[in-house]
Amino acid sequence: MRVKAAVVREAGQPFRIEELELDEPRAGEVLVKIHSTGVCHTDIGVRNQWLPVPLPLVLGHEGAGVVEAVGPGVTKVVPGDKVLMTFASCHRCRMCLQGDPAYCEQFVVGNVAGSRPDGTNALHGEGEVHGFFFSQSSFATHSIAVENNVVKLGPDADLSIVGPLGCGIQTGAGTVLNRLRPETGSSLAVFGAGAVGIAAVMAARAAGCTKVIAVDLVPDRLALAEELGATHSVDASAKDPVEEIQRITGRGADFTVDTTAVTAVVRQAVSALAPKGTCAVLGFGQAGTEVRVDMLELLMTGRTITGVTEGDARPDEFIPRLLELHAQGRFPFDKLITSYDFADINAACADSEAGKAVKPVLRLV
Image: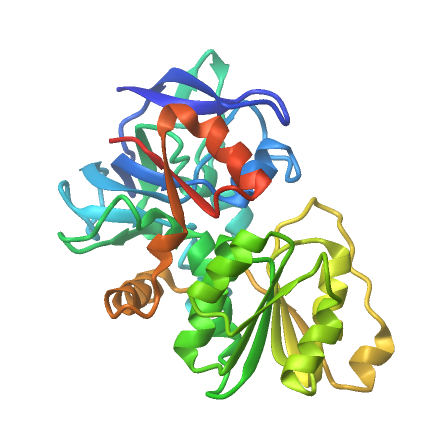
């Protein structure tokens, strides 16, 4: 079938809306008509080739839509089902079998190789076009996904807002709820009040943290973080965040979360911890970026640094949990969203990079 897709052909260059040919779904695959798709910092980073996925490429990995067809062997969904697409995992390796699909031993092959695991692609156009990004490439009117990375939604699901749960929102909230698991009354500081960071803020309040501190450079984002659950905010352009967090908590934060991928900020997130505190690092930076910390800060205080991918989520379980929290009014992630027409994808990316839009979502229907 003919589809329209946003193609990046050169590193750092704007997306081009092109007409491409999309194959029918193969065994284990699902054809989804895309209703909307989030724009994630990872999409922008790969467009800029921070991670060298082959070009030309169709990105997008927070797609939501309706199943139009399924390939042989698919039993999880049928045509007409509403679905959200997330990361892919093999469901066979040691990590998947122990319940950690975000650390699947085939994660690179299934998500960022720029093709199916066998090296083929479902998209065809002017020359070779790479796709299958996070086993979906949802910057398109239709997408080929796999059975393992679609989450079946209820018939009343709002497809205009659910897409970001597939990656960014899941990552921030899951880091708090699945990995850090703060006890009621804990303190938690989040460095970076973008979509991932504010998702972590909302999750911290839902978990019962009594001091939730947002750190950023953009006043509007700090105000939104306070509206959605932060008890305190720190403008890092005006105050030292480490000193402020220690002042607010009296001893340092029990937990910190870095979403910025800025090495100096990661260092601050570690220094802002209380003894035996844990810093979760989940910002996506350029490949090869190194983080330096003072060894004595680790040895003398028992602090921990941990990396987190996709919020340690099991999407089929975790995404319905987030939707239930949203229904209860305890996780209003929809307030992060700014909607854009698909044709305005480059404006959406620019607004995200400039801090004007916390979570851009592209409308395709």
